[in-house]
Length: 305
Image (cartoon, rainbow, N blue to C red; front, side, top):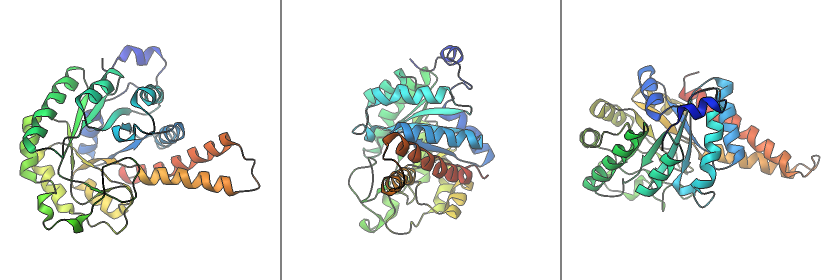
């Protein structure tokens, strides 16, 4: 179970797989963020790794449990690991939005270097208890753990992340659902998590209105919790808001929807171009290139390039 350094060396990997903690602790020191991208297809995986290599930046390659209807972890996990091990830049291999004990353990068995256990919809007490158990197991095999505290909105237009749809207008008091700094401090102390996904107004999926983020809250959470913070629903946030969020303590940005849309648009444009032969493999390459370019734009912002 866990990370086998000898396996990486013997199979010709350029870098050892790194843990999420390794990447985010460095990002926290440098006041940068590492992009985390979901590889649901071979085109996406290739585009993500190519983007990181061309910019010589670390990257987080991840699979969300909510994407199991697209491809199961047992199938995509070894493929993600194959590309992560052969990358020329540091790569953390991460399970995103793991919602069960069994799925987190499965990811660790497959060689993932970090897992997210998401019990944010449960009571604080249950979230603490269950997350702490995952932390014990993951840390025992040298892996990192991300958890979530608070409620992150879900768009009506979304692929695989979150459940149902809502926005800030559905709640009378946002303090009731956004992450409380003091509660975050207590949660980190009781669980030992390596990083924390926090709620401050972001949305999973496509933003249908301009996001209004509580960016000062991020700084207060950072000062209280003292661990790297994670932004979910990173697609569609303005460059200026990214910069402020990262300055205030965000060290990992989950970015999927707009990357996925870029690949879809490129495929559609290729399909509609009557001057090109209708070969699926050629369309696949067009999608990979579009994903790569979109991921590069995101990484440049996160890494302050």
